[in-house]
Amino acid sequence: MMILDEMGYLPFGEEGAKLLFQIISECYEQKSLIITSNLEFSQWNRIFSDSRLTAALVDRLIHHPYIISYTGQSFRLANALSRK
Image (cartoon, rainbow, N blue to C red; front, side):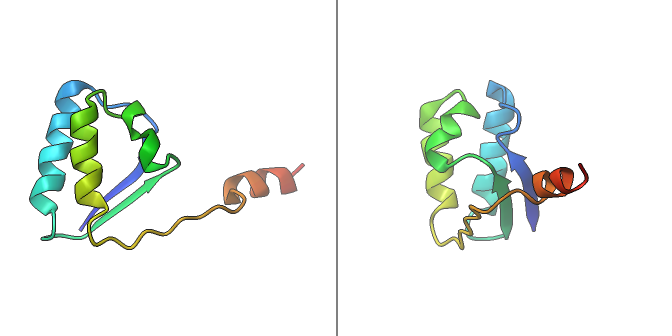
């Protein structure tokens, strides 16, 4: 299992994006992946500079997934606001 937390918090350089693509491609339909992100897939071009690579990566990730979309209030924000 591979867990990628906060995907999109920082953009990937060209070499990093290619390496991540290779890892995800090797895991494709072989290993479990958990990815968290505050960005919708349509915004992942912000993370990876190559739109073709981004499309191929997202294509692999959305084939047979369980996507859990959380749209509620941030726990960290609610906790910070309750301390005021």
